[in-house]
Image (cartoon, rainbow, N blue to C red; front, side):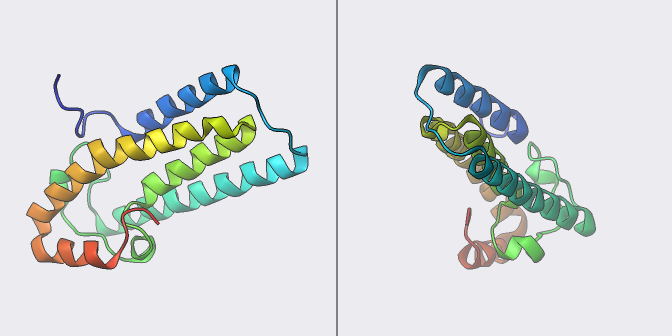
Length: 153
């Protein structure tokens, strides 16, 4: 089987995990919460996800480097300021927040499996290969950055 490293765009992976979450929701019991509490969680995690995603994209745009996650070898600059002082992967953290919003909307804690599935897949097939390439491109600067800032949160 060919490697899945850097093959599937992360937003597609997130959508596939959201579909898995929907399927899990169809065959498991949901929990009951007030609509106000449910929507509070949904809105909160959408805002968090959008904030992380937009801040990450803007930092890449300001640095004039590629945002294409399938071609990290085209990176021209090591982006390590702003949101990248909090996490090395703000856009993936944003996608996790969107999946948590979806889980909140579904109202089913069993759907958390989709969030963990996304995090596992993205770490194994996207982040680790990206980090290997960025280490080759930026050497000690990237290693120092890795030691200073966490992969997730």
